[in-house]
Image: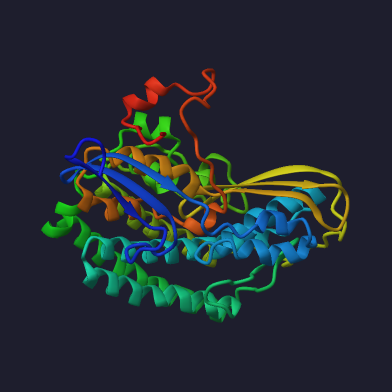
Length: 392
């Protein structure tokens, strides 16, 4: 309880039944209304970036996959793109197309998993069970291609391990037909169910201006009308040959974030079919030297949660000098804490799940306090304008 006896601080975590991973939230409430919020991350700091410095370029490929179980392929892809840029090698088009195909299958998996988690946080356990049952289909497809359901290990430095045979292509087409039908059902549910709409519409609304100011990325930003997607803005792999459309929404609320992700699932299904029908012919790999030439490289990819950035530095040896990973969850946390102000405490689980958070992906945290800001960088008056009062 604070000095004002009508206001309380509600702590959640780091160990709490409502949290899937450890983090510490504090919500200042006046009755049921949230008046302030803070978060402390870093409880699952695993030292992956430091560990990369003691492993070879190839060993790190498997280490980076384990930053996130849901986004293992996109992490490996971002890493390989950076290393290949340093090595000056050109990956065969067929390998890049297979990488894109795997990335879009992973996006479907991630969005369907998120749909279930978010529905569960809102008390809609029927939708949770349906979506998690149906996502087994895409996991089975990934397993048929790579032999693994979670960490696919499809990437190599210079290419991919697995080819897409005509038989596999037919299996994927069949699975996509089923997934498309099921996602049409999910879209109908989230746009017509009165209870679900009541928990999401006009909740956590973020304008385009606010999304830009807070640095929101991925579906969280696109649901606020920010048409930004690395696959379109800076195409990599074969996204120039098999382009995607940016899915946006104008509502900016939780409901819009559901709609954007389901529409992105439909778009991923369309692009995968294009790849299967027009996949380039050629080799799957090209040679990459064991010693990567000295230099620095930045690679950017669009993970299911948003832009994923890798900075890789080489000193010319068999091991990297530095691997820096900036994950999308780290960018979207500020939106949650800002939007929490003025909402009811019961809205917090849905608001938190709305950004599709990954606590383990952050792997680091900083705490910014008053008096430590650079006036040339931070404008506290501007932050307060957007309701950010959690820097204490």
